[in-house]
Every structure is written in structure tokens, then in C-alpha cells.
Length: 251
Image (cartoon, rainbow, N blue to C red; front, side):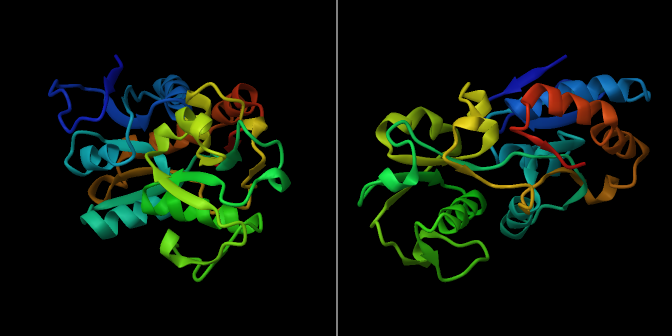
């Protein structure tokens, strides 16, 4: 059974014997469905629960409505723990969804005009990640590298106008932006071509996605089976075949 949870703190209070895994819609949900198939062979029944939000899966996990989630990277988790006091921990890596720069108006960065409007995610972790990616392209410099914000922009030669937006809205807003820095999961969900990115993170990125559970359950057998399934050859082959290099297996 699959439940879709959209921007709501109220999870349906049904009782499931299955292991409840929270993911964001799109590639993470696709991968999780395959993980459920692999884990079933090992005796673990997984109920995949989809969210269209970055914060709710951690809230649901922390309060016991989920047994695990798989959609975020370590820097995002650490920020959530610091801000909200969650008792959550990572138990393994899964895939890297490289963040990239996309535009419907320019074909290369040299054509980006002075004063161009650039959209970035509005959550602190991915917003900082986007700024670091812009810095790597030589579009600006930052005063600090650890979770930078727009207040940390030191130089901005093109006088770019940085607009912070909800991450899922960025693909839909390309017509109104000159450039948008978008996570690959939202790119795929919007049926965009990840290979159309003007620039993108490489495999050295520290933003690999992780499997997260409550601290109290990190050593449970079911959690170990979940990690084993995610990091299996079956999932590696599935990711490589399905996403054709747009998403990288790092488990």
C-alpha cells in the first residue's frame, strides 16, 4: 500500500505491520519502491510513504509515525537536529542527486546578464549549497563556506538578484527567472532533463543522501535489512539504468 502525504502534519493513523519508510515524491519514491522489492526477499515488508516537503518526513520520523526516511543529506539532517532537537541519526548513504543550474533564457553562463534574477532553495542548507555552487562557477564569492546565506555574499560582479524560493517551485518558475539552482529530485519530478543543466555538482559533493532513523532504533534488525537493500547491487543497477547518470549511486 502507498499513501501520499502532501504538506500536512496529519499522517493517516492506520496501523501497519509493515516497516514505514518516508521519502519525497519523485526519484526517491521510485528508488524506495525498488528497495521495497529487494527487502521483501529478505523478509522485510516496507510501506513507502511519500511527502512533497523537506521537513515533514523528519517530524513524522521523530514522533514515531515512520520507522525511517530516505530523502536528505547529512548537512540538512544536522541543521534539522540543531534547530528542532530531533533524536535522529544516519545509518547509511544511498545516492547523490547533484544540484545544478538551469535556465530557459541562456545557453551558457557567459550570456547571463548583469542584474539577472537567480532562484535558489529557501531552506538554509540547500540555499547555502546553491550559493557555494554559484561561487564555484565564479558568479560570486562568499565570506564563509559553512552554511552560507545571501547575507554572506562578499562580491557579486554581475549584481545578480538572488531570490529564495520553495525548492519544488523552482522548476515551475524558470520562465520568470534567468537562472535557477535546482535539486535533481525536483528536476526529475518536473520532467526536466538533468543533462540540460548549465553546470552541476560532481561526485565529490558532500551532499550524498542518507537513510535516517531514530537513535533508539539504529541497531534494529529491520533497519539493517533496509540499509542492506538500499546498498545492494540490485539498487545500484536500477539507479544506473533508470537515471542514466543523472543520479549517482554512492551506497
